[in-house]
Length: 318
Ligand code: CP
Ligand code: NVA
Image 1 (cartoon, rainbow, N blue to C red):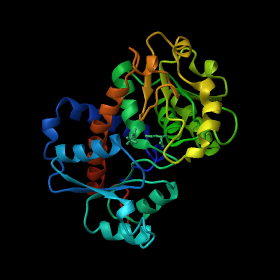
Image 2 (image 1 turned 180 degrees about the vertical axis):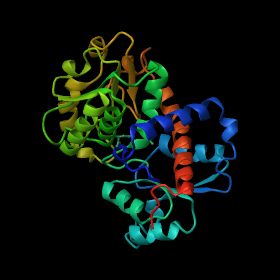
Image 3 (image 1 turned 90 degrees about the vertical axis):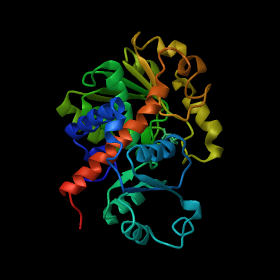
């Protein structure tokens, strides 16, 4: 294991370990200032980003390394002039680690298969593991524990963040409830739900998919929502999706059903008046900027762990 592609491949112990390291880095960043000296991270982007791009690049600088931002719109890969295979075989000869934000999940899997350096999924249509590792760190900081908590996710059930939350919560023994409209287009991937339920049986968590937002949020410790218009969703879907997701909007009335001390999370970017109201995201229960900050610390920890495992030859590839 020297990649981060989805949380499915990471054990509960590995997840807790990377969170512990991230918390250590957050407390004492200076101690890690040279840990990536002489190392280069390549950051491949097919989609827009604020948090992921800036936190990875800053993180690499703070670790004493260097990051290259590579926008596929100016690359032979993006122009259809070079294959994924040739791209990663080539860059594996230059850089020490690759991260990529892509549309197709199969493409990051191919990168991980063919690269000879660690590969990090910085979001695909299917999964966003860096986000959820950072979120688990934030929940642990705020709630002092993970196991046994209830996390309610409301809105678009069929996206990267939901899938990674399903894996992440199940591994940590968190009870996850997804409240989303009925239908394949809006509900989580059935294979992920099945995998998560199976893992949850071992960790003491549970997995519930419901089409009733009140049932999802009742007594939740953590309320989570995400964009109704993920980067991969075409703009012409807006009206239809607003109609479908409006009953799942996190507003003050719905928040009242969660525990009094519930925290509100959104991975951002967020639109006030869509997936949540302004009073919720700008209110006292919201931890969205602590959540955004933790992307920096967790990604520094992810990079250090992957480099360390590679050095030790854990899960070595050909
Ligand atoms: N949450 C997150 O990944 O944000 P960006 O799209 O800005 O990177
Ligand atoms: N589900 C969102 C997450 C953004 C960080 C998207 O894919 O756009």
